[in-house]
Length: 398
Length: 207
Image 1 (tube, rainbow over the protein chains, first blue to last red):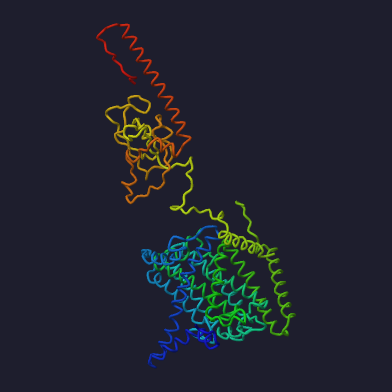
Image 2: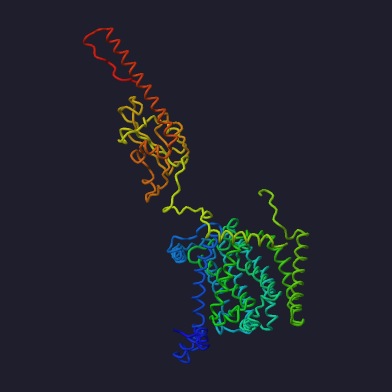
């Protein structure tokens, strides 16, 4: 039996890092940089698509249960082999390229999208000492790479030469550009509090404990507001319900990837989910303390497990939201981005800045919380009065 | 407050999610091949031909009048009339269909054939497991495949079949009474004529 001595705990926590070092010992010095890179990248390339497969099943089961259905239950016990069946299906399907499509751009769009989605993982600290590259400007790199997805989406929409594709792509660009601003501004508070753009140091700043509780930014008023705002913007960025206008099945069928079939379609699907995991991952890094345990007495659980548990929780949240909210209209989406999200994130930055200048204590916490709550109430009241944000009125159906 | 509706919606979906694991009543799905619901009497899909007795060919009620063929809106019925006659369900001598085909890939389940049939020979079926690997031949049902017993009809549409049976029995009684009367009249005529060599010219009702 393995005794949970501090050295053993350390060994289990660092098992992947130690394995890599052990393997590197057998590699000649010339090949070491390349081998090291491959060994760091490979787990990401395996783990996240695997999580994607599990998530598709989880999502279909979850949505089913929310709608009082069973969900997939024919492939294996409880339908656990459904992702495999889906994979086989998408691989064996015919790959159709429209006759008038721009062949090369059409081909490269899904590739660029998947590459962009994977690149974002390079700065995510999955566990302690487990990050592909510790860039000093990691957060900036993450958001810059995230913007590359928009290029891929427009490539897909434009090259397909279909009105639905183009409409979907235009919606997607408008939406993603609009929500990129609040996304970055919401994430900025964590950078302000840490004083570093490196994802690793942001997590390390949060992985300290006072009275059993960790110093996660989500437990501060500005951190909580920032996390909520960040998650709303992240939902919009990953084109998920209620912000799934670029896909909008009921209006423009599938949006920018309507002219894709077979494996290319699967790549889009994969990239979309990878993007969702990546933004969830950066939210975990910025606000939920990355790989750190939620209580100081739970630090013996390996750090990477905490990261993936948090990722699972956020994914379930995404599924829950998807099962609850209907799609927004385009003007509602834009109003929400520019008239609510942007002012709220800017006010949140003020709150986070003020936090720095007040002495530590409950008064600071309360003051900050009241400031944000008042700002929220006044802003939404004002928007309601102007009619920019309102409960949807049904003229023809009720 | 702003966002209150969203929270209420989230609570509702959460209730549904967990409720579906707790209460079986929430899950309305019938897991089809293993589970089935009791058939509904008023349901209908494609027509079939009713036969009485045990022999599907001899007991077929259809007299090849071809009304259904003419009335069928999508023209999915094809009938060949026989050259000879045989007694029908009520005992009269009638033609019978030498060939009766229904292409159920064309049929639109309108039930007009059933409504126009004066002989209660064609009725709507409830069998829905009709998938086949041959989309043309497999869905073109011939006389044999269409023929289903009166017991089966009673099984799927009990109320309707009972009414049809009563009407047919009534009709049969009338026909028999008429035949009897005709026979008696013929016998009386024969007796009155009192020609010893005369044999009864008419047997049973000749229409």
